Amino acid sequence: MKRTVFLRSLALTFAIGTCASVGTAAAPEKWATYMNARFGATVDYPATIFTVRDPEPDNGDGQSFHSGDGKAQLLVYGALNADGDTPKKYLEKLPNEGVSYKNTTARSYVVSGTRKDELFYERCNFQPDGGDTIVCFSLTYPAQDKTAWDPIVTRLSKSLRAGRGKH
Image 1 (tube, helix red, strand yellow):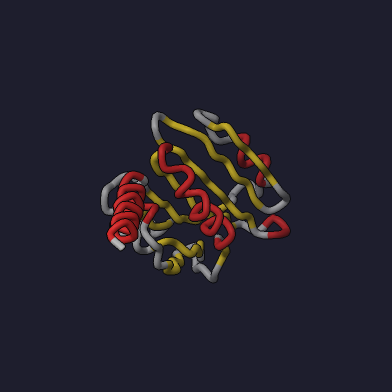
Image 2: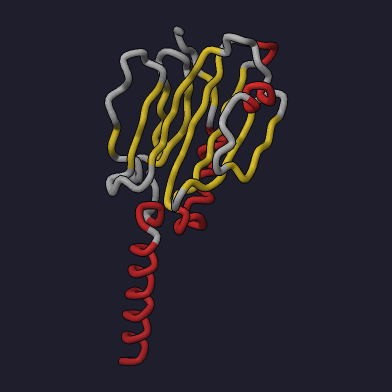
């Protein structure tokens, strides 16, 4: 009996230590939806991780969120595709610093990589038929927590969509 209690206690201590070592991404997430009023950029995000909502910029392009410990940042925004670029053409105009992965489709692009000790992931969706709006999110988080963040990145990426904006 004492051995069972000891083993359970040891397992609990290990689990708590593991959760603490990966930071904010280890906690069970409660998800919320953010939609930008100007461009309609809409994404589901882990509200229990991104607890700090920065003031919206005056131009209304998007929203910046931070984790309570300041180690992770999420930007959700929209932009006008003034030149009517395809995702590939648009991506060619962006800096390549730290980029280790790029993928384009007819309607989106994804880039990811490392800058210092952080990983970044950005996805932008383009409207079909040369529409004038692009909706995006950009995420940065500690590289050491990659495994914990992988399912969060996947869910964010799958949830990005365009709502009705008034740009």
